[in-house]
Image 1 (cartoon, rainbow, N blue to C red):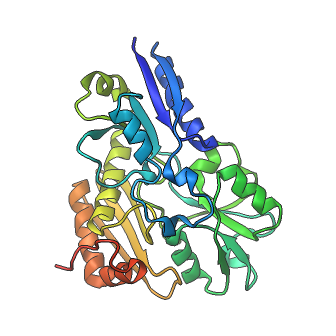
Image 2: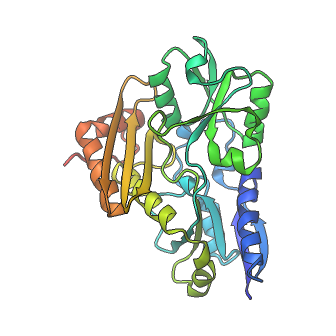
Length: 311
């Protein structure tokens, strides 16, 4: 039995995730406290995330508490975790993955194709925006921030004709009532790590790593490692117009990836199969760079974001 402190953001979804992990650990007779930590991403609520440009905006303050030994582990949505962890930390577990897809949520319309011209669709994700504009260049993309329940209230109030959310977050909170369509990855490629929870600890903390070992899922670790390797190979963080989705099938990994312009005018796609997660991710990133992904990303972010040079 151990006494463990979990660091978490204070949103409804983050607390669901932290309590989910806490309950699994309590079932193993451990004593668990949850400590809420406000992150940069939580403090900046009136600006689209893609314009904030802060690396680790949802993890930095939690990592500082971890380093200061104020908490013993951190529960994150893996898609929010930077592709390169600082040397002081490691991912002790990547938990079994929820549905990684995006969902189309609307009070009035059944799917993307049924939206009228000029419909207002809420999202603050450049990844979702570029794919949505490729499918429907005639709709209006409107910035959408806030917790999942806040976003749904804005939809119900008529501020949007539809919004696009991660299936996992909506399902975890039991807020599926307006989900009309689960968007296939070939239609809208998810974010790297979407649907997975990552548990971060201080590097070398063997006692805590051992305690958390039962939460690590080998398929989730392999697929998300592949997706994150692709993201790293493209020099991207969690607020970029990049999608990556890997599946474990018949002993091999199948990776689908996209890079696009936010206005939907250009969307690069790549698919590949392999058995080494990191190698597959890196090679697929290189294939996208050869197609011009570096040019797209440089145009989107100027020179503020380091995009790997084309080989």
